Each structure stands twice: as C-alpha cells, then as structure tokens.
Length: 387
Ligand SMILES: NC(=O)c1ccc[n+]([C@@H]2O[C@H](COP(=O)([O-])OP(=O)(O)OC[C@H]3O[C@@H](n4cnc5c(N)ncnc54)[C@H](O)[C@@H]3O)[C@@H](O)[C@H]2O)c1
Ligand SMILES: [Zn+2]
Image (cartoon, rainbow, N blue to C red; front, side, top):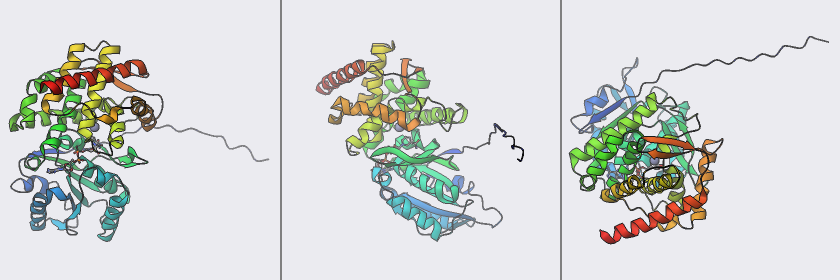
C-alpha cells in the first residue's frame, strides 16, 4: 500500500494596487481633449488602439470626440463610432453585449486597447460589462453624461446588465482606466434625468456627510433650477464621497455583508422592473431613500423631522416620491429577499440612526415598513397638493 499523500492547506492574503483616475473637464470633446489624450498610453507600438462607443443622444458631442481622436497622432481609432440606444434598454438584453463583443473581436482589441464609452449610467454599465469580459478585461474609459452617472456610477467599480427581470443580475467588478466628469455633456440632459440623479447625492450625504446634506437641503430649489455652480458642487462632492468609499472604505468589491452605498436600494431595485423601467433609477432611489428614512425614524430613532426634511429636499429638487407600483406592498417587500440573494448570506440593510450615522440591520419589521410606506403616501399627497 502506498503511503497516503498528506493533505495541505495554503491560505495567502495578497493585495493588488489599483489606480483610480478621475478627471473633471469643461469640454473633453473639444478644448479639454488633451486631458484624455494624455491618459491613452501609446505603449511600444506607438499608438493607442481605441474603440469609441456612445449612446445616440450624445451624437454631436461624441462625433466631436471622434474627430479629436482621429486627429491624435498617438491614437488609432479602430472603427467608426459604435452608436447604441441609451437608457435601461441598453441593459435589458444580451443583444448589445453580443454586438459589442463582435466589434471588439472584429477589430482585434486587446488588453492594452481602450474602449471609450460616452453615455448615461445604463450605457456605461452595459459597455463596461462587455469590455470587462472581452479578453478578461479591456481598459475602459468612462465619460458619464448624466448627473447620476457623474455623481455616482461613473466612479464605481461595477458593471452589469439586467437578467431574469432582475436588476444587475449579470455583471463584474472592474476598475475603470479613467473617468471623465465633463460639465458640457450634461447640458443636453432633460430636466427629469438631470434632477433625478441627485437622489444618489442625497443618499451618500445622508450616509457620510451631514454638512453636505444641509447644503443639498438648502439649495434644493437651485438644483431644480439647474443653477450651474450649485449643481456642479453637488455632483463633485457626491462623486468624491463615492470615490472615497471605494478607494479607502476597505471593501471596493463588496465582499463584506454590508453595502452602505445601497441605502434605499432594496425597494428601488424592485420598483424599477415593476414599472417596466418607467421609473428612472434616480427616481426609484429617491422613493427608496424616503421610505428607509421614515422606517429608520419608526424603528431606529432617526429623528422624525430629519426624515421629513429628506422628503422635502427630494421633493424640492423635483423628484416625485410616489409611484403606483409601490402597491401592493407585498410585491414590493419581495425586494428584501432579492436584495439578500444578490449579496448572499443573511439579509443586511443599511438604515440611519441619524444623518451621518448609518447602521446595518438584519431584520425588517414588516408592519413598521408598511407603516413607513403609508406615511410616505400621505406626506407626498399633501406635498403635491401644496405645490
Ligand atoms: N454600476 C454602478 O455602480 C451603478 C450605480 C448607480 C446606478 N447604476 C445604474 O445606472 C443606470 C441609471 O443611469 P442614469 O441615471 O445615468 O440613466 P440612464 O443611463 O438610463 O439615462 C437616462 C436617460 O438620459 C438619456 N441621456 C443620457 N445622457 C444624456 C445627455 N447628456 N443628454 C441627453 N440625454 C441623455 C439616456 O439616453 C436615457 O434616456 C441604472 O441602470 C442603474 O442601475 C449603476
Ligand atoms: Zn443607485
């Protein structure tokens, strides 16, 4: 009988340094192009191979960017610009992913090539996913074109598409090569999308920066009116808070059970498909944040007046805090289990004890949650009558 080969265990902790590059520009498709050009490493071959993908709504700006890239001696544009439909449709099927992978294959992009994507959060997510799985990861330059994507998702390290009627069911974590928050690109954004993006700014301020929440509450009407200095500062602060969380929060790839940046998202992610994506992500998040603030006031001692101030702030920014799909509440509550499944392990939801004092909880009291939702319904009916 041969001796039994002894078994062994090897556990090695290791870490890999990442660089997160964020640039803010006035017109990256025009006079600020150089800031982008210098991040495209031409390497030993002498030219950076680049594919430009843009959503159709950004056609004139993306065309200007294509002209800049074409004129850059260090860049080889590998194809015509790829135009895709914007909004959640970009994420709702595998079709976009397949055609992007085909384009990447046909143009022989490799892991040192660049995909530059211009678009809202939905397009960034879909194109980012295709770039992340082609050759296990092509360098991705994100140029977010909505307030939400500039304030939140653009600097995130996630991408995804929706599947099985569930938000972000297929996706990866991937650190982008660079992110450009460009003020000019927001100019063409319709009011509805412009305003709804600020729900993520309110969310992150409630979690991490009480002073910033005060600032947002004070300037809510200016945000509604798109006052440039106010909106730009709010986007910059929100982006910085999200970026700090990712780069120094200790859990960029969400391995731990808590996902604080998903405050208000258990219901938001349920509401979006329930409305057939009639609700924008930012609008669903505003409703989710309002519900969880009221629930926090009922259960965790979050001051009640703070909960109503959050609702008032979102309302003044111009984001509706109700949608008929909130009912039946039983259907909405399924979002809790979907949220748990997405992360695995036990249910962990972030709630608030005070502004700037989040707590993670593992149980939701259904009766109190129904009460919170009813209170929001009453509040918004009154607010709508008054405005
Ligand atoms: N990966 C992440 O970490 C993360 C974080 C938050 C949100 N998200 C995802 O982001 C998506 C929401 O993104 P969003 O709020 O940016 O909305 P969106 O991408 O759906 O865009 C909203 C609408 O604005 C249009 N649009 C975009 N930019 C425009 C511009 N400059 N001018 C004119 N029209 C423009 C789009 O075509 C679309 O019709 C959701 O799918 C959400 O799940 C991802
Ligand atoms: Zn979100």
